[in-house]
Image 1 (cartoon, rainbow, N blue to C red):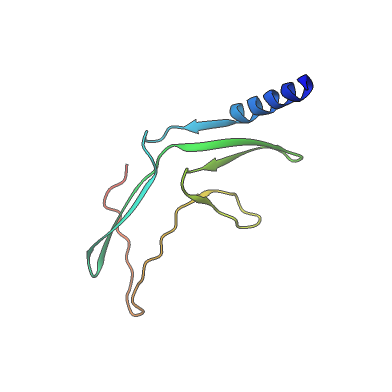
Image 2: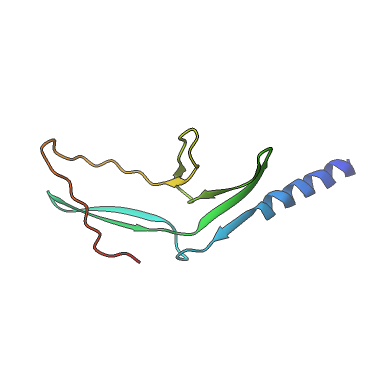
Length: 104
C-alpha cells in the first residue's frame, strides 16, 4: 500500500512540474466577431496565457502548447499548435479583404 501511495505521489508531482504557464496578457483568450455593417466584420482577438506541457517520447523531449478553451491542430506530420476557428459566410461574388487596424 505504501509503495502505491509513493508511486502515485511521484506521478502527480511529475505531472504538476511538467505543466507551466507562459503569461502573455494576464487575461483569458478571447475571440469576438462584431458585424458593423452588411459588408464589414470587426474581429477582436486577445491572446491569454499559454499553457505548456512537457512530454518525453522515444524521440526526445517535446513541449505542447495549449490555449485554454480552444482546440489543437491535428494535421498528421505537422506541429500540434493551438487554433481558433470561426466560420463566416461570404457571398459568392464578393472579394474578401483583410485589414489589420491595430496590433500589439
